[in-house]
Length: 196
Image 1: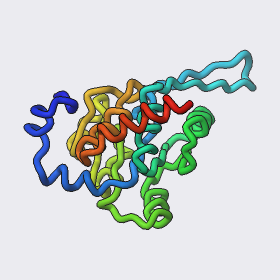
Image 2: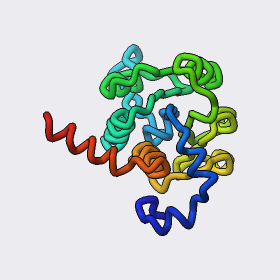
Image 3: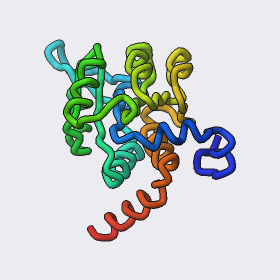
Image 4: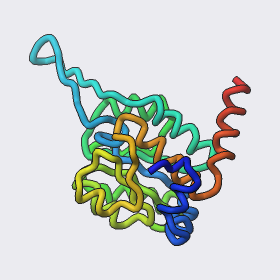
């Protein structure tokens, strides 16, 4: 399905779904498998070295920029502690980062309290079993195309792109399209780039 095709979009998403998505103000993403492809590269020259690398997509960085221009709050909740996640979040100026949090409900509740939001204002992008409890709680659960089958069953929308290959950007675009703000976001992005 092409979310950028008006015909495909109207055929796939009914008014009830669009009305739910219009209430979203906070977009939360898992990291490994959503912002990355889920692979972790480990290495070092000796037993005391512990080098870890992950691949992040610049497309998802552009998705973060677009979301911020549209005044969405962005948070990352990762079950696995990783310095690479901290580095990427810092690059993107994401301050709501929960790194190494297996129970994602606690940070989720903290975020709702911090921003005075309810479940209906939240979207979550996940890919694995650890994400299911949060997907069942938010109003707008989103799965990436490489997600585990049980996660896809919980999703209102499944991206066509895989985690680490622009799936976060696609999810942000989909939310913006549902809210009727996609063109506004693209125009703001172009204007912000031209002003640099």
